[in-house]
Amino acid sequence: MRWANVSRFATGMLVAGAAALSVYSVCQAQTTSAVPVVLRSANEFSSIANKNDRSIALFNEAAKVIDSPRCLNCHPVTNRPSQGDAMTPHQPLVLRGADGHGVAPMLCANCHRAENSDTGHVPGNPKWHLAPLSMAWQGKSIAQICAGIKDRSRNGDRDLAALVEHMSKDDLVGWAWKTDAGRKPALGTQAQFGGLIQAWVDSGAVCPPL
Ligand code: HEC
Ligand code: HEC
Image 1 (cartoon, helix red, strand yellow):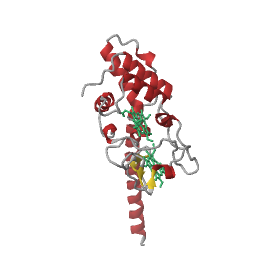
Image 2 (cartoon, helix red, strand yellow):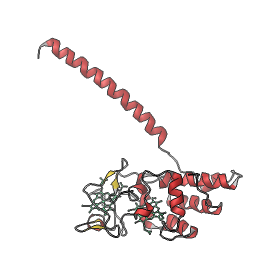
Image 3 (cartoon, helix red, strand yellow):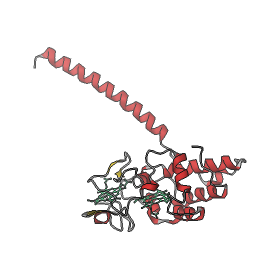
Image 4 (cartoon, rainbow, N blue to C red):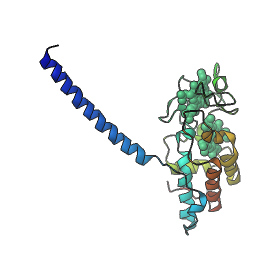
């Protein structure tokens, strides 16, 4: 390469580098402002006097958990789970099968054992399987997810008390706070999340308007 070409090349690299840097900082700024950092507790909403408004505010707070990759990856709108914070399609290709436990020989339990494998970076839980299509959340608004969760024809025929029980006690839901090493847990604690759902039910289980 002649020197003139080398220096043109070097200038090109610098410009490209600067452009990449500025794109990077824009992305950074957007990410940090969009990602919620704390989960507020139910009692922090008691000052909202209007019961409907309070109920909606409580659900929106709980949605910081519901609408997070730890839950959404198992509640897809297709037959394939997604993975990671970027919610990319599950690798390798696995499909839900008749009951959410996969299609042989790619059954969920072949790889997802009763406990997390930190060395293998594989999440674990004895009940690990995909939520049915009627409970698909990915790509839906908080209001749509809320309506679906309350609809007994879609939610596994759960009344409101059963929903509180499931969200605050179920250990597959609870995995979201007991992730394998390197995977970000859901915000707050399952107890705090359960408290928000309980307070949402106590205030009339009002969903945000569709
Ligand atoms: C061949 C092994 C294998 C099979 C079979 C398998 N998985 Fe996975 N799965 C993995 C591995 C490995 C990861 C971790 C990938 C990563 O995030 O690096 C993973 C990650 C996931 C995640 C991402 C969790 C998160 O929040 O990031 C979900 C959800 C998931 N699997 C669901 C399923 C379901 C449901 C089935 C059955 C239908 C299944 N997997 C079958 C190996 C498998
Ligand atoms: C490993 C996969 C997996 C993960 C992770 C997961 N779920 Fe589920 N979820 C399921 C399956 C499977 C069902 C259906 C089983 C049932 O009805 O008991 C379900 C059902 C539900 C239901 C029943 C009602 C409905 O309409 O969806 C709720 C509520 C729920 N999950 C909440 C959550 C929340 C909140 C999280 C995250 C904190 C979460 N799930 C994480 C697999 C998962």
